[in-house]
Structures are given as structure tokens and as C-alpha cells.
Length: 177
Image (cartoon, rainbow, N blue to C red; front, side, top):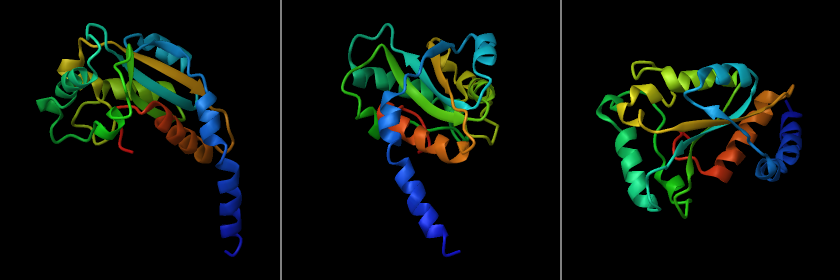
């Protein structure tokens, strides 16, 4: 037991470069979320992913766009269900409305499967997720997927650290953390 604090200090030292690594990671666009065949084909791996929403049709007002997105996100059918919440403090990190706003950053040992669950889970499911199809107001919005593969023996140590650093980088609007 006396070795645990030493191992913890070593791991802490080893993880110090993770924010700089996350800042340099290029997360390529895989496809739109409507292309489920591409999601299955191109992201059946352990890794990290980001889901963005298009702001097409809105004209530069971040606060107004967010109010509209919030209304669609917090629809009546979403009340009482287990779902990822909007995080207002992350919105405040954005200075302007981007063409694509980051909605969610996540990790999974099977990105394709996890993204499919974000799309298809009903509000009745106790699994946390975006539950995009269960939100009728989001049907007219376009979403896209970015993903990178993370092959690592120590996935359970590296993936959460990278996910957290990517969350700090992109400030996604939705999530539990």
C-alpha cells in the first residue's frame, strides 16, 4: 500500500503534457450524423469524438442562437429523463457564434456504438446520452461527427485525461462534467 502514493505522483507527472497534446490534436470531420453507415464504417474503434451542430441560418448573435438551441434541447419530452444537460458556463467561453458549435466531447471503446446511442436512445433509457432523435426540435438541425482513434494499453487512464483536456479546449455546450 505504501507504493500507491508514489505511483500516483508518477502518473500525475506523466499526465502533465496532456493539455498541450490535446491542444495540438486534429479531430477530423468523419461525416454528418445522418450518415449512420459512415459512422459505423469509419469509427468502429476506441477513441475520442466530438459532435457539432450547424448554426446555418443564424446571423452572428450567439445569445439568440443559444436561446433557440436551448428551447429545442430542453423540450417537454426531455423533462424528467436522464440526459446530458446544457452547461451555461461553457457557452460563456465562446466569444462569437461559429459556423459549427461544439455540442459534446466524449470517449468510448467503440465510438460508433456510442455515437449511435447518442442518436437513438429514447428518454425512457436510464443511460445518459444526447438522445438526439427524441428531441423533435433538433430534427431540422444538422450535426457532424469528429473522431480520432486512441489505441492504448492504458486507455482507462489516458482517455479520460484527453477527454477532459479536449472539453477545456472546445467548451462543448452539453455534458455532465
